Amino acid sequence: MPIEVEQSVLAFGADMKNSFALAHHGQVTLHPHIGDLAHPETEEILAASIARQLDVFHLKPDLIVCDHHPDYFTSRRARARAARDGIPLIETQHHHAHLVGACSREAIGFAIDGSGYGDDGTIWGGEVLRYDAKGFERAFHLRPFALPGGEAAVKHPRRALEALLYQIDEATNADVIEQLERAVNCPLTSSMGRLFDAVSCLLGVCEHPTYDGEAAARLEAIADESERGDLAFELRDHHIDWRPLLVDLLDQWRNGIPAAVLSARFHNAIAEMIYCCGKRLADRHGNLPWVFAGGVFQNRLLVERITRVVGDEFELIFSAYPNDGGIAIGQAIIGAKQWASR
Picture 1 (cartoon, rainbow, N blue to C red):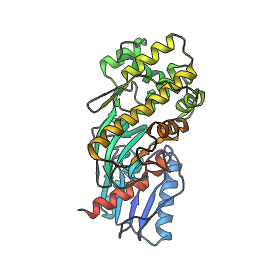
Picture 2: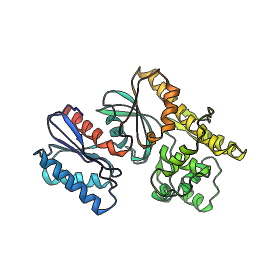
Picture 3: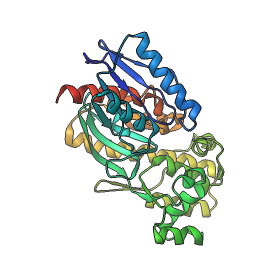
Picture 4: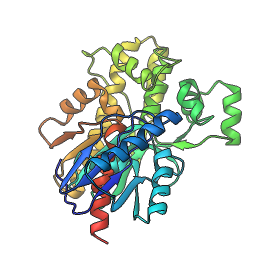
């Protein structure tokens, strides 16, 4: 794809669904999928692929760009290479890169996924940004909640569910309650992906996922697509407050409403959340395009619900690379733009 850049820019991408990008001579090229960088073998594939790509184009990077997560393998490798070769380095925010990779002009962006390192040191994932390639404003985000056990809460949605229930005085697991009260290994998150996982667990759809995104995928699969009802929620200052939604969901579940109906109502409520946030920003900033990026937008039902709710009122742009595989494109564009403006 075209990019305004005279120098060569190497963008390392993310650690999950990794793919890197190389920008030069007015174009940015996304390398084919490499995968999750959780094993030394995959890490070496990334290093070899970057070396081969640079060799093919007879390039040495003039600029290196990476995610600003302190512990990403890609970020550590990028920092080391920049220091070793004396190459300037720019670090980008995960969700900003998601959105810029889909649309680099000024827009209202919905970056909704499982996790990404936030500017405040917490785990973001339910973000509404007003942005362009130079920067962003975090306009709205999902009300933060704890992840008891950190990564363990990703693999075991029951932990995330208990943390959500704790905020409405409905938690039942004594061990998790104690952990939350002591705030031991309980990082905060605004992740929409974890909210999907928790609802899937609550409705008995998927309590023990075996792969990334399974709980949310199964929740989508069982939804009654003819259902048009939704669930309560509130916008409080910059927070999208999910607590009324959880109270509403729990009450209806206890009153025997089927999981298929509640799944559909949950999806409908998320679409309404998105519309309300976008409309408020549009009222303030004008008729900007609405851009959608992040793994949650691999959910066909949610995308259809959003399209139906918004209608023809605003221009909608859905990323061709909704998961982390396209982040490197956004990194390259942000890096080039910020470097040019220095």
